[in-house]
Image (tube, rainbow, N blue to C red; front, side, top):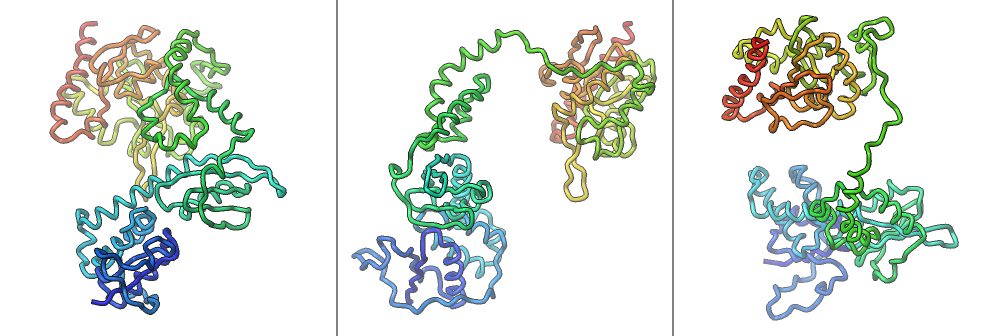
Length: 477
């Protein structure tokens, strides 16, 4: 078996690997006959040792081949990342995987193949290293004869400088900057990226006037009440700390967190500078329902088909409040007509309640969704949507006059009680609002539909028991 020497220009020469691999593949050179090297590495061109594999004989340059062999597009993406790993055997691993994909087409479906698992592990570690570089590069300003230049020092684990540099070019297009690492550097002058050799940390690291400003800013935005050291170290490992100016503040700020939190809690509640005006029974001469139909206080109102108001007897003694209309409710303009509404109808019947005697509505009046192709997938309302619709819900509660309210789910409970309520903790219990109205907290029917099949039957029985309380309380009065 003759040996083939495949020498790449540098450690991150992905294009060189692709051209070389295509040439080898076209000549049907098996993976075990290729010695991959990087120009300039200590081992490249060195004489063979006693236990080394035989050195390849002098070979003519490997010509690029026509793309006669097709491989999955996912392999191209996998190789682009895995080839940037610092593992010396990565070039051989990826060529062996490429060779096998051509020889064994079924391999693309074998996610447990050891070569695939190893390559994907390399790619995953490279992607994480790239993410950390984007997050933890800190520039310092250096005055030059041609204006300020911003310089950063970073220590990536893998050969990612070439791959990440375009990100910084797009983000800091108007700045002249350099990023230096131990093995490679990149420079942007406003026109083009230029790559060069690495350098030592003491040649780059320097403090500038902006650093003091950044530390002051970091200290002021530090929220001791949200301190989670384990989560922070998971996202920002300690090995990056010595290159982050703000890292020196973490220990003293963490030590003061408990005291600062206690001080914050002891302060009186702040008064909002802007209050939403309370609505009268009629808004500008119109009913609240008509006024809500033109409400655009949240962005989702513009995308929904229509405002879905509640329905039921105007003098109902019990009001059921859900989260928001779904896809079918949005199209029909009526609450609880989709699959969740059908389950609610069944549960009400099992609990001995007549839907016709109840008032049904939602905390949010517009359908919030996310487009996936032609499908509109439900998306839970956020704080903004709940606040925007709270005045309409309160107007509805006041107009109907129901003394007992049923919160179907956490969003409805938060809207009715003006605080976050854990349904798992308060389910089946009556809570009291400041206006004296009683609120029964229970599940939303959609939550039951999302449960695993084996959990649906017992949850349904508990839910019906909750709803049956409405009938018992109504009979007692």
